[in-house]
Amino acid sequence: MQLPRRSWFSLSLRLGALLAACSLGAALAQAPKTVKILVGFPPGGGTDAIARLLSDKLKDELGMPVVVENRPGAGGQIAAQALKAAPADGSLLFLSHDHTISILPLVVKNPGFNPAQDFAPVAGFATFVNAFAVSGGNPAKTFGEYVSWVKAQGGKGAVGIPAPASTPEFLVKVMGEKFNLDLVAAPYRGSAPMMADMLGNQIAAGVGSVPDFIENHRAGKVRVLGVLGASRQAALPEVPTFTELGLAGLEDMPYYGVFAPAGTPKPFIDQFSAALAKVISQPEVRSQLTQMGLTVGHMNAEQLARRERAYAQVWTRIIRNSGFQPQ
Image (cartoon, rainbow, N blue to C red):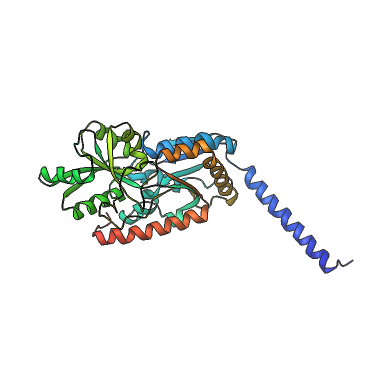
């Protein structure tokens, strides 16, 4: 007996839905029992603190343990290479800011990974700005006073940065050119050791993310004298932007996101993205992230991919104009 056309259409729809449900069920049945989140910097820094805050809440949303594993070194390059080599089963993710994903491929000839080919964007959760700060032992209370202080030292000064060939390094270069200072970027293996030297007055100044500095700034142990971005930061309303200080063109805001190995099934990505969206919508989590100096907002996988590409385009131009050659 031949079924009417409408019956065939209805049957095909039901079969298609059944197959899709079976595929989703099979994928979720293979879901990992534990999710490990890589951080490319040492414990104690801003990125590490953010990852630990989120992982503690994500375990409840995902219904499984979520642990942070630090793989510091080379500005996140070691962690990124570990992500590339990991199985694409949702068991290993990478929480990173712009430096490793957008900047390293522009400044390192062979970083050992290609974000477009090796990684799958999962979700973004915040933007932030970089900041310039001085140690407690530096007499400067404003950025203008810092410029005068450096000139009184012969016009030369060292500025700590969390990683070589990073956006903070290029900011140090631009600052030196703009204000006629001979500033040298001193690279560290992450913000935590840089902060330790600033707290010990071993280095007079540093550039890093607002989350790197904010707690010690509030405690009066370091002083943030300028922030990037188009407007002042809610967490630091008293600190002027570099645009206000006469250094325009660096308003584009870096981002934080989570990435998976390429080929990770979409159900895993969607599940984690939805869980992260719920976590950052919790008032206490949003408040803590805001207090760290982040502008909180969820980006799905596609939105994070667009944000990464746009940010990389901005810095491709800045790096090229600086004359920097990939190393």
